[in-house]
Image 1 (cartoon, rainbow, N blue to C red):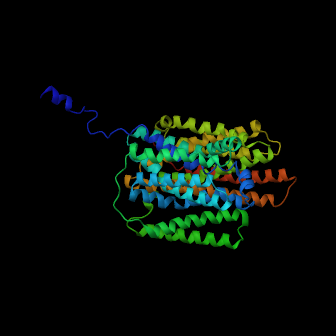
Image 2: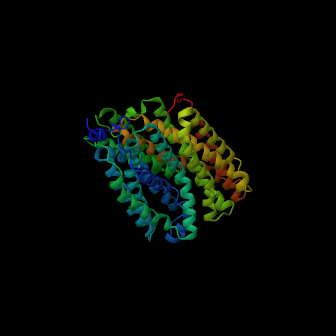
Image 3: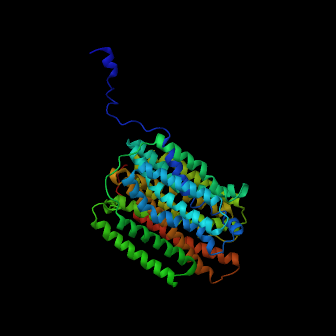
Amino acid sequence: MTERTLRAEPRPETAGAPPSPHRLVLPIVLTCQLMLILDATVMNVALPRIQSDLGFTDTGLSWVMTAYSLVFGGLLLLGGRAGDLFGRRRTFVVGAAVFTAASLLGGLAGSAEMLIAARVLQGVGAALAGPSTLALITSTFTEAKARVRALALFSAMSSGGFAIGLLLGGLLTEWISWRAALYINVPFGLAIVLLTPRYVADPPRRRARLDLPGAFTGTFGVGSLVFAFTHAASDGWGDTITLGALAAGLALLAAFVTIERRVSEPLIPLRLFAERDRAAAYVNFFLGPMAMMSMFFFLTQFLQDIAGFAALETGFAFLPMAVCMFGLSRLIPKLLPRFGPKPLALTGTALMTGGVVWLTTLTTDSGYFSHLLGPMLLMGIGAGLAFSPLSVIIMATVPTDDAGAAGGALQTLQQVGATLGLAILITVFGAVTRTPSGSPAETTVDGMTAAFTTAAVVTATSFLVALSFRRRTA
């Protein structure tokens, strides 16, 4: 054998190994995920100025937040399956492009109706791109350690993005304008659209038909249910529209389950929930965001309306929690193989429960360092420990052909959990505040502590679900 032939042979340790993913793949995908998640809260701090500029009514103002999450959560299942069938990279790029265009439209909005329309269009783009972010990670990072690290970072972006949205919204609203919170998506979105075809490999596409009956019933069922709970927060459970939307949502979801059990190519394979750990992880991805969103929403109002914080100060108040979440994302790849998902999830949900219980002691005189910083740190550390193992449990063992559907289900439960949870807790808040118990400020805080008590029940339930995880390493 010649020297030239020897040099041409692959080395034994690399022969047949898959090519290493480009170093820009993870930044591209995670940037998109962060952009989609933080838009659920980035407008929160700016709501008073948006109301003043565009003439929103007090009840209509809530649609600035819920229009995005309603469409995002309602269309995620369809977006996940579309990525599997039509190409994950293509769906990812199209979704990012729609989201970017909608962000520009929202920044230019001259009326309340135009802003709501832009937020709806943002939700459509997010629903297309969101499931493909997770599917591209699992199909690109095939080596175990690299996949765990990528999924841990993804979880940090998913949970920390809510807090970062508040911080970024405060900065932009105070220094520039609330419109800048939408404009900032444009350069990042354009970069994602331009770089993805060049640096992100396109996984093999499945040859199959889209489950249109399942898409219709699942999408409109989730959307109707989210709308029912959102509408109940302002109009109550006795309202005809609320009850009609609730009945329609339950009926459509029942039809969806029936369809998915019978069709050969379901929109979301029910086998995803057959494995015990994966099913429990899905449940906790539904429960966890309920408590997180209640803390973001009510503490934002407490800091501005009760404690007198400015928009910028309110944003920075959530910085320690975001730092905890992202700091833990660096440790999860080391902790998960050593301890397994169960101890991490149990510790995380216990800390989250402790943080929410602490918030039930709020009074009108509560200070940031004495009563708020501690719960925020507990929630940040708890979420970092609880959510990262869940992504690994769900995505590490799912079949490649179902990766998009699994990612769509995960993010659907996260978005719907956050939206439904907030609507339920606002309903609790409204029930308490309708009967004044003192000054307006005292009544408001009483409503908040009642909502936090309900959130504590949710996180305690999440802890019980985590008890069902098997003790195994990732």
